[in-house]
Length: 194
Length: 115
Image (tube, rainbow over all chains, first blue to last red; front, side, top):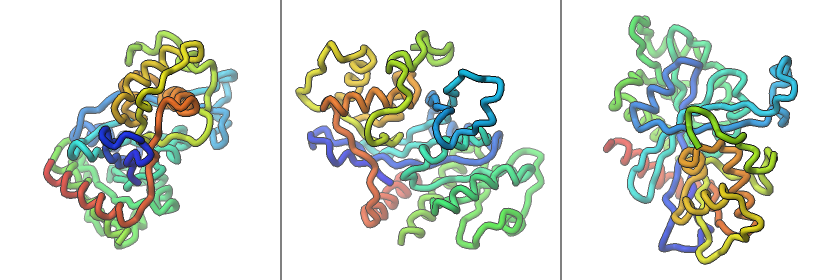
């Protein structure tokens, strides 16, 4: 969950504690907007070996010889203080990037699953994933202009979400709204541990 | 190395075509730090190894290094694994400690609320 550089030999230069929060949800659900509302988005890319176990072999049709694929991720950093840093990772939502999820989610504090009520089913894979892994997560309904406002209970039923999992409304463009969403997630993670 | 125009050399050329690091996989938020006083062997060191080492003079997170150097995560992990194998860096992997976690999460929650 946290990294404190415990085997770093020089205590004077002690490493900050790092925690990881995942921002998940379907393509276009607002992950980039949310990360950008809270912190400067920095470029982070990964090149994945498509011949690795878990890769989707059928995707290689027509690209014979191409062994890696480049994925750009949303990546942000919030320094709580000099000794404590929160890292935000946007999990690429498209199916072809699912092979990266295990790598990104290892040891995560928890996940915000951003949902667009116009396309609720887009976040099913994220919900399934975090449920299976027992990773604490909350649902954040991104309030898009023009989207019908659904009651939280309606969404909970539609997504088949357990009663203890918070569902909040969020405007991914608003810093305060995004901050409150993260606080809700962290408090939910504390409740899950306690 | 530019961020937008794409790398000048194929990133995996700097790690001689390897796509997997040696040993335990480094988490994206693992903290790494150069071992004070350790000296790299020039015969066995690419410029990218040195660039990573320079940024590790103070504790640095794997994802920060990759972002700062404009290199893919996979490449930075391989470079870091090389440096670890040569005793040039130390690694603090994330740990799972429940009670410490609760205290820590409260600190995170309070800190975020103040944003």
